[in-house]
Image (cartoon, rainbow, N blue to C red; front, side, top):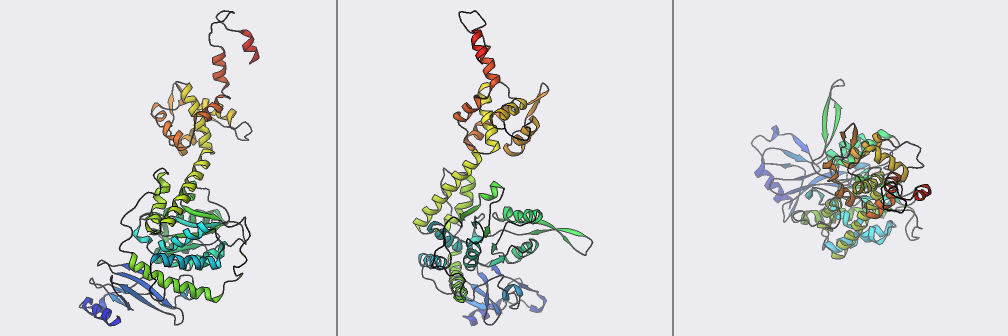
Length: 478
């Protein structure tokens, strides 16, 4: 096998091989369809490249392309490898079929980590997905969150060790190296204690997570060239992320990208070892070797078709979860993901319906049915009575206008000296009512606080025995 690869290299060598500069690579998809993956053997500290041509695997320390470029592996004495910050397979080994491989992964995870059966199976499927993620344009993230001592770090150690090119980043790490590691190595970011203490670090981490689930959205950072000048540098951060943290992110859009489970609230299984044995690292290496062969065999056929998780769900949920669904072959596992996505969509809808935006929309739904024009001052007044009676901050028309513009995409216009909801924006309200699940019952509850409408109705002329002014006693009752 090695001789065949060497003969291919001799055919590809240019006339002046010494003029080509060697390019260290972790992984590559060549123009002719061949796959290149890095290997690392811990016992010898050596690296090599595995090259898959669709039928056979060749092992080489240098691959020369037709354009003269020379691909080489990173040096084996790199501290990132010797300190197990980045992990590679040592070879590609047979695995049977995908069902057997998923079962083996699930058994390995179950041996060392306490997860619910649903999350355990989804985690095993996510591991498979990391080995072919570069065939997709979007992807979800995997997360375990809960209080300290609930198994989050163990989860990262065990599951992260069998993902493709895992990059282990602990909570003590600064964010800056993550940009370089992700751009250089790709692979799967394993992020522990993602609740960074300082707000600037948290903001940088959120940039990685916001840009990292869709291909083609690098993060731009200013880098010093000579200690005096700065230039913008684009860092590719696309790839799978496995995260452990105590809480959640404030950004609801970011939260929608996670397949999550809480790790606290239940007693851990008694059969889980308190400390990871040395055998775990050997088991993980054996699985990485099988998963490398899985990548070689699966890469060409995956990513060519998609289907929504559930057409009734929100587009964002379908967009994020459909790539993982496309790589799941087992029907029962596919249904597990669909069930999880439905629950996730319902939870997001419930959170949205309890937000300030939803409360304002409930006011708008009532006023939209009752008033010819809707002024911001009227919205602020009714919102204060219906939802913010005990609020410490005064709800002003300016505040209402800011929420409408920034969060709901509505742009009030000035009319006769006051700001009102424009006719064009009133046409958008029905969509927003559906999105935030604002019903007629919500509008009816707001109507109970609308004393302006109540007084207008009370003072309206009615036919009564007391003449055109109505029943004076009714007004006193109010």
